[in-house]
Length: 229
Image (cartoon, rainbow, N blue to C red; front, side, top):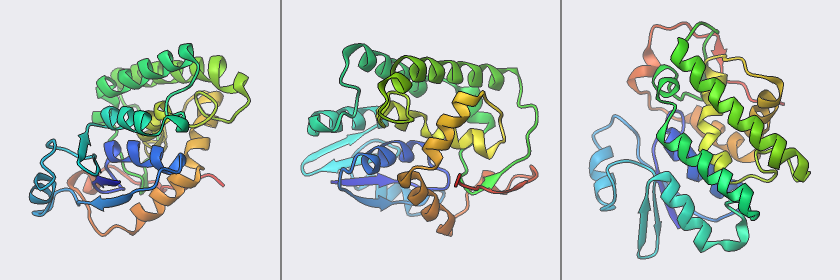
């Protein structure tokens, strides 16, 4: 299997299926096409897929869009529990994953993903605060209902699932822009950032030579993106 992605420093959509496949030990190779370069469009067009990354190629099957990729993987690897096995938990996981896919535009626009920098805390606006409040509400509901009671692990539904993969870029945004959340949500963020898969993603991102426009913004930088110990 091959996963086509963009810069690990910035590509939130690429992170989603990548971290899911790494966390669940699904073997794949990657083809990274750097953003804002002349090679991006022709290399992506060669896959005859969508107009954006990620793209998953599995033999003669090509899938694009993160949720579609995850659903394909769930069918391809039914033993991996990509979605929770319990019906009620699975329904909630799919619901919040799709809400993430379709919403939270204020947070996305005000706080673009960048896993190489941390900015000082500041007011980001009412719309961003509303998005963060909604996200942490969903996290706390999942953790208290399905995660912690399962005793399986620190993730939303105990073990790492597609729902965690969908929210992984949000976790990085909160860290990059020094956005404070409640203790349970912070513990969840620490678990995601401290995972072996994200550590590999971050290591690779720090080594990338490519820089996109918003990485050169005038906003002050507090320091580098530091992973939890």
